[in-house]
Length: 384
Image 1 (cartoon, rainbow, N blue to C red):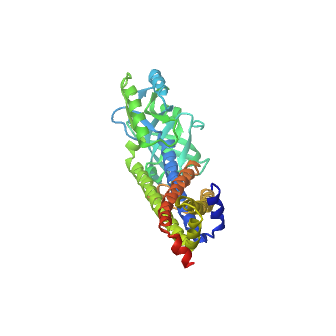
Image 2 (spheres, rainbow, N blue to C red; image 1 turned 90 degrees about the vertical axis):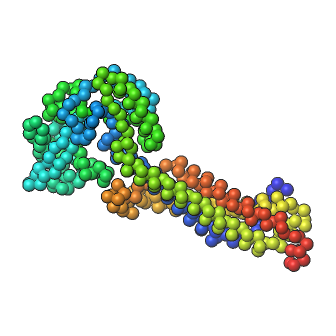
Image 3 (tube, rainbow, N blue to C red; image 1 turned 45 degrees about the vertical axis):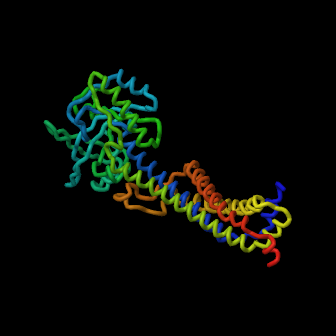
């Protein structure tokens, strides 16, 4: 009897094309939601990571664009922090406020000197918005005025451009070689404004960042020049609150789609059982148990769910690939931080969502199987 449920399920006409489409739609929506939410988190965090690192290690009271008092690069502190588990890099920088002027246009910027910038001396990488505001292009000369105890001017050559997140775009940050800013401030090679600590995980959670910030802070407090650590979420909580809200919405979508797919499957199985009620009665008179009959309809439900999963996955992955390469759906960066719907094609996300929805559908299918035990073979066969 082990092969009987499989044999019978293949002979029963399911008529489940509509159910397959509805289940496929549930899989499609869930996969889109997970991949888009993952894309938002990855895109937003990578933008923050590239410009500000993961953890800021700075003297008390430090704030961009930075103060005029330097901190010394303590090799023992750097070594102890780099030995912490999960720390990938410790990046010193020097930042100062400046004013860019061209053809009568004036705009305030933060000029940030970083190590390993890949640029020659007095070359700069500027935000795209600054280039558009000031009419600058690659290869052009850009004069930056630095106002402090005395006014200094530096002529930088625009080397390249980058697009920052909308939330940080108001503080337009110009990236230049670290040595240029040290010379501007009159500092030696071992003097910097602060440090940015980079961790190994590409998309760490808020808790991971908090734990790493605490560990780095403990090491820094023991240094000759005590410094304080703050993670990116602590400095820009509104962005990470928004990302958490996106994740919460995805969970709501997942639960709703589980309910919708499960309800559709329950309805389809009940209709199918009513249509085959005489077959159920005949098989029960031939000795098939309720459990065996339930296995028949569970197999049918599984086939319909798998067909829906394959169709939904294929449609979702095709749409996501098109969105990733052609940016079909555009967004307002001022509201969503990015200019188009981002996509993360991490295989783990579709796999987990498939398992969750499929398991929910099969659990819901157990409900109509209770109907089988109420079928009276004598009545159904006589009515037939």
